[in-house]
Amino acid sequence: ALLCMTLTLAVAQEAPVAPQLTAVGQVVVEKDVPYLLDPDCVSHPRLSISFSELMKQWAEKDALNPPAKGGIVFNGSSTFTRWKTVPTDFAPLPAVNRAYGGSRIWDLWYWADQAVIALEPKIVVVYIGDNDMTTLFNTGGKLVWQPNDNNVAFFMKYVRLYVEKIRAKLPNTRFIFVPVKPCPSRFAGWEVAYKPLNKALAEYCAREKNMAFVDTTGLMMNPDGTPNANLYEKDMLHF
Image (tube, helix red, strand yellow):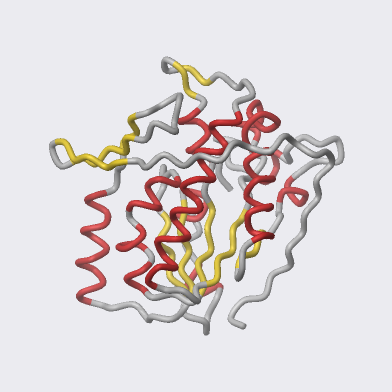
């Protein structure tokens, strides 16, 4: 195996089962900007999909200097984007960082062909969910951290679609998901958003073949259950 990690799950209480969402979303393009229209997203039935220019830049770069195929691709949001030493940290294994800051799971799903499938990886390591919850729990421009099973269910719907899209072309791909970190700047949403998200993601990985969930949250907590601020930069969001 190219990469061995230990799956660790610690669940203190059983949470209600999130609803299963099955509506078919549509992507429409307006003035070169894609939008996801999905009735399953009750709070935001119209979601923007960004990063068109970045995908073009990666395609141009890869045409000039094709990256090695059959290796490891890191995909996700800024927590991975800022990991600048991925290729050297995993050498001699071929590892490519294809994360992009600000992304949500529906961005990863939409751009999976360009960011992941084109590299034909054997393993995909994913960090996603931070920005998803701040988008979905945003009401009228204000974050409202109140319990909402639909938001986590919607996130998981696109996790499944993302994995299915990649495996439709690369059926033997392994996935390693990393949980959303307990950062001080967003800890107000930990109990109602991020902790349920991580639990749903861990359970999904445990059920599916060639999937792993590497629980790193305990390493980032103080003994009293609060996030360890010493791990974070001044924004209390990034490492």
